[in-house]
Amino acid sequence: MRIRGYTKQDEAGAYAVCLQTGDAGADATRLYDDPRALGDIYVGPYLSLEPELSLVLEDTEGVCGYCLGALDTPRFFGRLLAEWLPLLQELHPEPSGDPKSWTATQRLRRELHHPDLFYPEPIADYPSHMHIDLLPRAQGQGWGRRMVEELESRLRTRGSPGVHLGMWARNERAFRFYTKLGFREITRVGEGDRASLYLGKRL
Ligand SMILES: CC(C)(COP(=O)(O)OP(=O)(O)OC[C@H]1O[C@@H](n2cnc3c(N)ncnc32)[C@H](O)[C@@H]1OP(=O)(O)O)[C@@H](O)C(=O)NCCC(=O)NCCS
Image 1 (cartoon, rainbow, N blue to C red):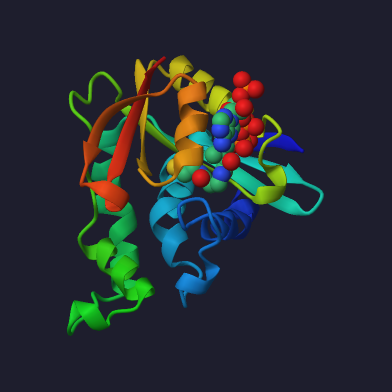
Image 2: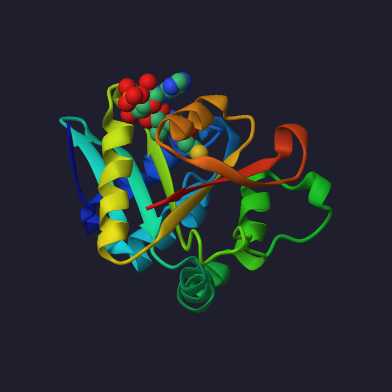
């Protein structure tokens, strides 16, 4: 396996990793009738807007993981609104009717029109943010640590003083991983199983 910078040919593989780890770390394929719906929110914007902070993990079968970063979160969100979301909004109009009848894909498509642009304050402490997902065959062998360390080094080189990330509180395995790497809880939004945790690390 090796870690390398993203190239355009990796897009389909990165979207597949996102779907196969998209249910709090477990396979979300059965949940979405459109396999691109998750990646359009969690992967595509990074590959398109922050290619130099997009790392992929590759083995002989293809892309088996990624670690994606944004240097300056408020600036990234501004570009998301101006450059990425308009294209997707045109392709996927906002779903109508009773939200209770929407499919999981429709609920995600709604997010294209009402994006979650939350970041933990004070943002100047942890202005960058990141996502990491590895397929099961790549997990538990130190690749996650190596990828996060490579991304941290790229962020530090570009002058970032800190990085944050958001995760489902119920993804306990990921929480233990991030804690081991030096991340600490900054804030929590929501309660119980549906809560999102925001963790941060100074660089
Ligand atoms: C979470 C994830 C990125 C971790 O990557 P990984 O390659 O499996 O983790 P590593 O092998 O690099 O482990 C790094 C360190 O974390 C520790 N660690 C990893 N998983 C752990 C766990 N479940 N419990 C305790 N420690 C854990 C390891 O022991 C290791 O410690 P060490 O470096 O001191 O020996 C990966 O398992 C994954 O992608 N899971 C599915 C998707 C997901 O949940 N993504 C996060 C969404 S927020």
